[in-house]
Length: 162
Length: 394
Image (cartoon, rainbow over all chains, first blue to last red; front, side, top):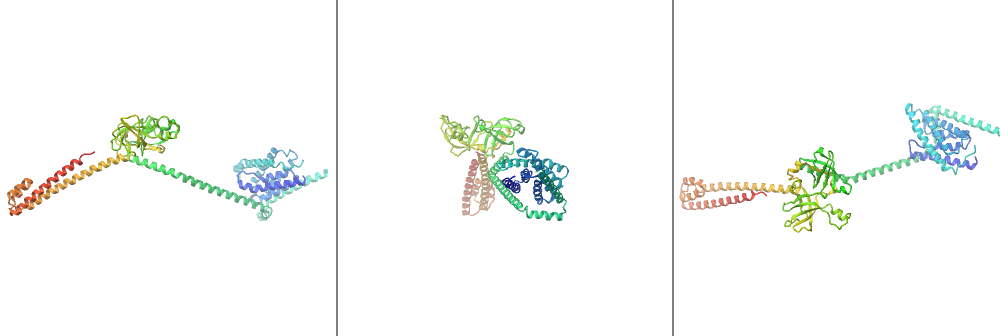
């Protein structure tokens, strides 16, 4: 990835992080889009797996600092997601928009599952309902928002060859 | 090249493993060590993001509060807009209650649903039917007067024609009973387009036809049902005279009436049962009732006058007797006694038994007795005349 592509990627990730802390509180949906996950996907498919894991760890730890209930759980989940996406880009055609949407859905859902299990706030049927309904819905909204963002940013982005 | 790739892979694995390890360590950190780490992150890396989030939440709060304020204003405006409607509905229901208290029995309250189509313009659907006691040809009234007559009755609803329906007829009279006629809908003359506003507004007026030529009605005079037709009882307001209209009938007058009931206000009505319709409806609607009550008041006043006159006559008679007795006490003049006996038969024995007075006293007593007897006769005549006058009831 050349410098231009790196700068563009950093700029777009910053934009998505900005949206995460502005648009999400404005909308305040119960199942809202997670722009941090989209930003992580955007970066993870363009860097090495180790770097993607580190990015995920930093972003997860930053978000955990605001939610002390499960400090470290977000970092663990995003590390796993970042590393997995970066590894999977070599296997799948990562520039495919729908495939990106599917990865986003899977990544966000996995993140939600890890967070809900680690936080230990819910148990039994309530936990199951949260994972199957609300987490799935949130993952779907994130996937849709991610696909729209990727389609809008496609002219600006330049995917690194695998 | 291969060595570089292997090194890169190892580096990735090491970085990944290190991140996983750090994540797990931060999860198991005791609270006294976790908080400094999280706090330093909040104060450095996350601080601008938290400020962004706070600003966004403030925007959202302002937006929500403005929405709430707008909703509150809209609710108030809506409530204020509904007040006149509620007031008019309240007035209408109060009038209905007043009518119900005057009718006392034999009525069925019903809601009137007005037709929306052109054909149903002059019919209304009533929310009560035969189960409630409504029969065909039952009279539909409102606090202001005649509304129409029931034509079709179902168990739970019924249909009635309004006064503007072409089939509507009612025998009517003026308030003083000097003019009689048949009231029917006013159908504007031909040559005017049926949809014109003139025709539409005139179509709700009524005509009073067949009024004898010698009877004239002034504009503003109220016309009541006369009770001659057999369906409508006497004394229900039908309309108010607007003026005379010229027709081909040269032997009778035709008057244009404004209906007593505004069609737009027909929302709740009373349906009179046949028994109630057959009974008297006096004192239910204003003017006829007030005429009747005025008549009764005049009769009562006449009776009391007669009673007062009778009492005055008896008092005068007693006074005359007393004065005659007093004046003739001791009088011995037989002529005066005879005169007194002629005037007051009951006084003769007393006069005769009385002692004889002096001549001048006898003359003056006779004079007074004559004057008293004449006054008593005049009072008796006047009372008789008053009785004759007040005894006749209009």
